[in-house]
Amino acid sequence: MRSDPPAAFDARFSDPEAGPTPWPTAVQALEDAELYWLTTVRADGRPHVTPLIGVTIDAVVHFCTGPDEQKARNLEHHSEVAVTTGANTWAEGLDVVVEGTAVRVAAADALQTLADAYEAKYGSVWHFDVGDGVFNHGEGTAFVFRVEPAKVLAFAKAPHAQTTYRFAAA
Image (cartoon, rainbow, N blue to C red):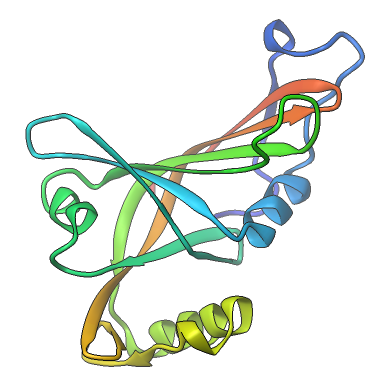
């Protein structure tokens, strides 16, 4: 993601004393998240939502999935995704939604950077070796994706505020 995209504060869904969430605050929430929810679209148009781990590097969310998992099969037909994270509370925390396009990461240097980031964040249980355009984990492989954002929404809760960041098409 580009640094400091323009922020649009939506007063309709915000407390009168609230202001826009600064971009670095939204990025920090993405970096600190232990769990994300990924929404993909099945070939027949139905949504598929699943929790997963991921890493955010340079304000870009990354995730991985086995080639036979539902989310990987969905991405073969529809590359548009939403990634959500936040606090499951009403009056505290920050929720962030990244809407965009999942793009496969296959370059060995980029995969190694991501593999190192996963292990630094989650520990050795999530050690990945870099294979030919994939992560290797035990006997399995995983495709790796980055999410090219179209829009990011930040929902602050104390006070409640909605901020939207929009990105130009790549």
